[in-house]
Structure formats: structure tokens, C-alpha cells
Length: 246
Image (cartoon, rainbow, N blue to C red):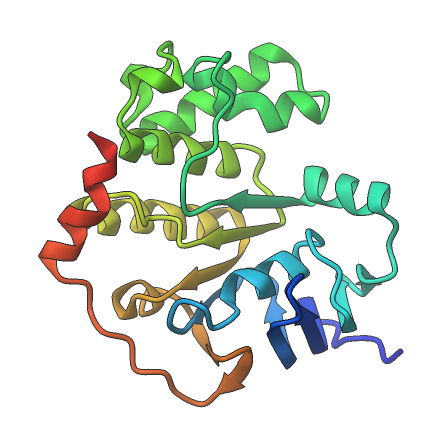
């Protein structure tokens, strides 16, 4: 193994991954992510973006290749070590909100902090701060089933930011939001990342979202390519994506 560059918080070399049916998802992808950088991984649906994020975050083990975090090899870690790494150093935002139905909004947002051992009072304070920044603080005592899907996604984003992770993986994080809301939420996310020194790896198939990043890596059929032309999201598509939130 060759150690990664010192200024790369994440580094991957020659990643290969196959789905359970044998279909290749990644075919030799290599990249480095600098500390504090916002990196967009773009490409059409099915290009391997989510698989790449999952391999970088230790959620999947590549069939071949290496993944390093702060010069520590993630690809050789056991399941428990990778789980602690994800709990203590990484944040994750899914394209659809996944919340604990028995917990209210602020408890969902505070959950990662409490799992780390943070006191309930401190965790609540941090959670409420992020909920307010994402314009969802007035729903702090509601249960997830009382919220629209777009509101639940804001809670998911607050939950990922509240622990101030070293690296935040965001897989199409604004997919459930109205187009008008996407820009505001993305500005909040990127501004927070820069002010807190959080490294962000952002998967997107939207050109407008990729444009907010410091740098872009493009994927097509599981391989890095020089350029992928992504169509802008139309207002009709934005309304369709949010029809689920009713």
C-alpha cells in the first residue's frame, strides 16, 4: 500500500465494486479530497455516485482498491472499527429522510450527539441551533409523521450537521425539496461546512448543485470522465419531486 498525500483527508485508489447481481458499479475510480473541501461527485443516475460515497464512508467494502481517511486505511478496518469511525467522524445525508418515528424532531437531530456520549442538554442545544438555521426549529417538538417530507429532510440535514463531523457525505441531499428551497438549504449546508471546516462529498445529478462545490469529479458508468453535461432541473421536475411531501 502507498500512503496518501498528507493534505488529503480522504483518498481512494482504483476502487472496484460490483452489485449483488454482478453488475459493475465502480471500475477503477481514484480520487483525493482535501481537508475542508466541498467536492461534488456528479453524473447521471446509475453512474456510481452513491456507491462511491458508500465506499468512502466505510458503508461498503470495495472488491478491489484502497480507501484512506486521515492516512488511516479504511478498507482494512473491521466492521466495529468502521462503525465507530462513521459514528464519531462522519455524517451522512440520504436522498430521502430516514428519521426515528418514536422521537420528536429535536431528539432526532440530537441523536448522533447523544450516541457519542454528549449530555442531553448540550445535544438539545446544538440540535435546536441547526434546526433554527434550517427554518424547522418551530417544529422541534413534533413527531416525524406530522411533517411534510421536505421538512423531514431538513431535520435529516440538521442531524448530520449538529455533531460537526470531520466529513459529511451528502447523497442528493435536497432531492425532496422544492426547487425554491434547494438553494437556501444548500447555502446553509455549504456555509456551515466552510465555517466549521467540514469536508463535504456531495453526490448530485444537478448542474446547479454541482456548481456550489469547490471542485467536481464526474462519473459515467462507474468510471471517472472529464466532463458530464448535466441538464438543469426544471420547475416542473421540482414540483414533481416534492409531490411526495404532501
